[in-house]
Length: 279
Ligand code: GLN
Image (cartoon, rainbow, N blue to C red; front, side):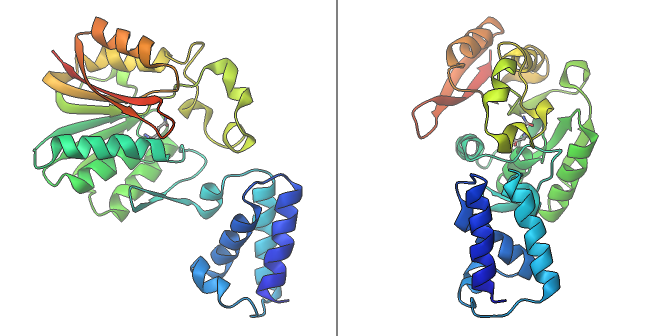
């Protein structure tokens, strides 16, 4: 059978299973099977596939039909124009988080800083920052050993493994020397709302990376409290937050001696990141 026919069949099956991006996903999964770029696949639609390739493609379509995110099937996600390995033990890096990276690079350009990334997951935040800020180095911590394995691979793939360390520990119980910058994209979804998220997220992404407790602020509050004792004076805390959490989080920050210096809004004008300095 020809590539075009197989892509069409896959696309139909995904549509039937309510995958919105059915056509695109079918094409992407075909490029994975053929180990070719999507553009290259699309100019060779008349090419015949062998049975092994068809079988492999059908398996991938079945995974996507069950709402497994494309990033997990490809084991890869682009973030800040770099490739990151991901799997079901790491949250999939999101474009909102790139807004935080952009701002931090502006602020710390040419500065020599030490960074702590709390709940590093795939390591995407720390690795992107250290790759851009040539004089920076840092530590990424996470409670998930399996996520840290991926973060370490990503540091190696991005050729900065000599400038970052990844450690398994909870921030609450850590005892580090003080840092210039602490970044965190903590779990901030209200527990009761997790079941309302898309199947892609709630059935496949790690709960520990999403669940922010009853009001979504459990982890954020712990990070703010501990950051106060883990930052140098005038050090910076950059936090990603959920929709509608700005008021409560800014209050927590002020109560813990932080001065707000920047809010970053997403494309829908919601504040999604707060940058503050320790007074
Ligand atoms: N730091 C990682 C990211 O931003 C993981 C965040 C998390 O697991 N909550 O993607």
